[in-house]
Amino acid sequence: MDADVPDDAPSRARSIVEELGVSENVRLAEELVSEALGLITDHPDTLDLKIATAALAEMRDAYAMFAPYKRQRKVSIFGSARTREDDPLYGLARDIAATLAERGWMTVTGAGPGIMQAGMEGAGREKSIGVSIRLPFETGANSIIAGDDKHVSMKYFFTRKLMLIKESAGFVCLPGGFGTLDEMFELLTLTQTGKGVPVPIVLLDEPGDPYWEGVDTFVREQLIARGLVSANDVDLYTITSSCDEATAIIDGFYANYHSIRYVGDVLVMRLRQGPTDEQLAELNDRFAHLVKSGRIERTEPFKVERRDDDRVDLDRISFTFAKRGYSDLVAMIRMINGFVGDRPAPVQSVGPAPSS
Image 1: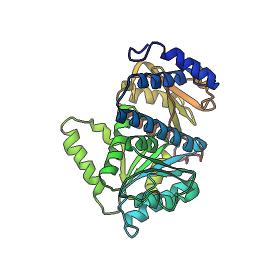
Image 2: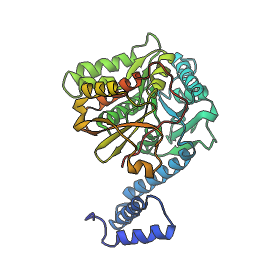
Image 3: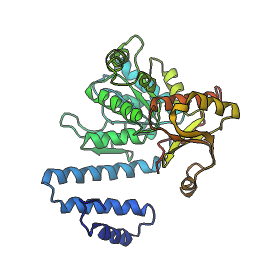
Image 4: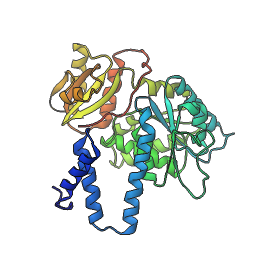
């Protein structure tokens, strides 16, 4: 038991959860209630308690808003709120969202003006989800999503970023200011460190605009040159000025690969089409350094996957993951997608996979 939690908090939490009639994820529910009781009895100051309460309330609202769309493919679009409607970047954001909507993707944005509004214009209200931030100099959600059930407003940037990233299976970043760069670099950090699942990340520029090339140059000449990130980490993102290429990158990431799930130290990768013996040998030759022990093998769904009815219809490979080289994990996914040639990804749900 955590030393910071009152001795009777776990038993009180158990009673509360039983009284509420919770029948799923009981252990996690008890831990949540126990920690809340512990926080209260720690007698935090007013500000700390306000932050914790507001953050939990915002997460609850956002979870409820996203819940009906859990099985639908979603792409988050990041970019500047200051981009004007006559700016070519505005049209580019609108076009990529429209193209992806035709391919079955919903668009998630920060629900503000500029690039966020452009993305929602392209996707249309029905396929748009908004996660806005309350700022003194912004009036609220844009006209596309205002008043829609698929919009939630938040006080804190950290809870907002959680929902902008957690729920999406693809990301498009257009030029923007501090906020856009913050979102882009946090996304890269989560993918690089394994705190987030592998996802396609597209840095989309207007033709002839060197914005993302400049960022890439900084990464290569400063971060990589100083040994602050690995050379392979640039493979986590792709720079393009083409909506068609951006769409192909995002759709193509799921041409064969579907999702991953951790079962203890074992990484389970779910595929639409499992590898042949020859392809499996190729994976073991190319990515042996990602395997802590044993080999990459074809496997049946694990017990916990069957319990959760978690994509048990899909083929699987699994291996004991060394938990390093996450950019190479993205490279493995690209190789696996190459096993099915140019076959387009089926229009069906994809998204973050749970860990256990």
